[in-house]
Structure formats: structure tokens, C-alpha cells
Length: 293
Image (cartoon, rainbow, N blue to C red; front, side, top):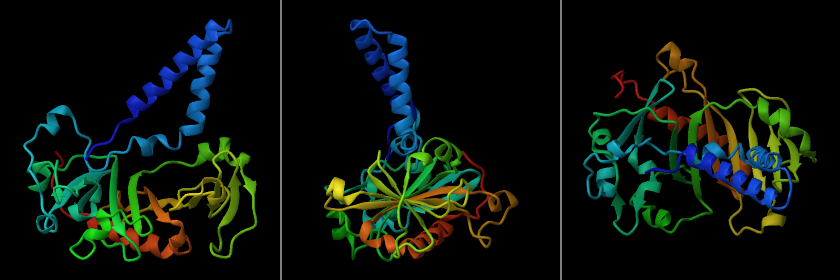
């Protein structure tokens, strides 16, 4: 369950700048200026997406760690009894494997590449992301009843969510907010300020127009421009473990960045779905104070 890290993405951007500089020199222009300008423009446009592209689902693996003996296939019945033990920002999580459909192999009808140390509870590595998959509207994980639905990738009901380190919004409001165009607010999203991003071709909704940890931003792709068969909205907000599960002072002060994708047909229900999602993460918070490995 691995995805690419930030380093190869940054390296790719630098390489694009290098080729732009080379092309500029061939045309008699200043290569340093055009190379630097290319890198700056690409970074400015994509900076918000880099952490998502570099997302690691459960385990920041290395060659040595990935060499840990693996179980061949974990069936659904076995997966119901397994939780992946991880830690982020000092908070321990036991994530049920059935919430990780991304690691499920339809051909093998099970999960592969799950580190044995995590299954047996001997490892609790520190991670940067925890991602879960569920079926709406009940946020149901993979089960015998909905397995066929998951395997068919039911885009109109699938939901993908993740928590990560908190990201301040100051940079966004300083450099990007001013390009947005104010729009009439929508009745289906009461209390949310409506804007349009002409560069990203997306409707943007904010809980308020200044940066705070409590800010909610919803991004919905412009369906008139993209004509997607399964339009998606992305909700970005914050998550803190509930007081009843945050037993230590450090956990009580922890704030995570929460991101979840919804089929646009569910966007009017973003608040109850968000509350239910936070409750799911609360259920995964571990009160076991075992040391990290």
C-alpha cells in the first residue's frame, strides 16, 4: 500500500524547469530566468496538490521494511479481525483493514502486502496519512453485503477520506484567494460563502473568508466545463479526537487536516457525513499506550 513521495514529484518539477531553460537558451533567451519562472509557476499552481499526490496510505515503507515477510492473501473474513496499528502526531490509531479497499485485490479476493508486524501488533510506525474507503450513505466499510459494490467501483456511492498533519491556510489566502470570483450563495449549502475559481474551473465554498484551523473549504469541479459522468466534491476541514477518547493532554490539543471526497449528489449532506466520519476516526483512536517502533 505505497504511493510516491514528495521527492520524485519535486525532482520532476525541477527537471521540467531544466528543459525549459535549455529550450530558452536555444532561442537566445535567458535560461536562468525562464527555468526559474517555469519552476515557480508550476509550484504555485500545484502546491496544494503535492501532499495529496505524495500521499502514503498507512505505511511509509523503505526497502528494508518492505522486505518483511508478507502473508500471501488475507481474506475478507480474516480482514474483519485485523487492524493496522499506526501513529500520527502523537496519537495512536488502530485502523480496521476493511476500511482499506485500496489494498484489496479483486482478482485474489483479498489483501496483500500487509506488514506482518503491524498485523501482530509488534509495529506501530509513524505515518503522515491515514486513508479510509467507505460506501455512502452509512460510511460502511467492505463487507459481505457490499463487496460486489466495492469491486465494481460504485463511484456514485464511494467515499474516500484521509487525515494528515494540519495545514495552515495563510498561504492560500495570501496568494490565491484574491483570484476567486464571488458568486451568489447556494441554498443547499447554507452558511457557506460561494466563489468561483476561473483558473481551476471549480466552485469554491468557504465557512468564512479568512484563515483559521476551523476553516471549511469545499471544492466542486465545474460540471459545465468538465462534463464528468461522476462529478466529485472535495471537503477540507479539521478533525480533533473527541474528549472521551483523547485521554492525554497532548492528544486533546492535536488537530488534524481532514479531507474527504463526495459524489456531488451528496454535497448537501456534507455536515452529517463529516460528523459521522469524525466519529469513525474516534473509534480508531487507540488508548493503548504501547511504545512506538
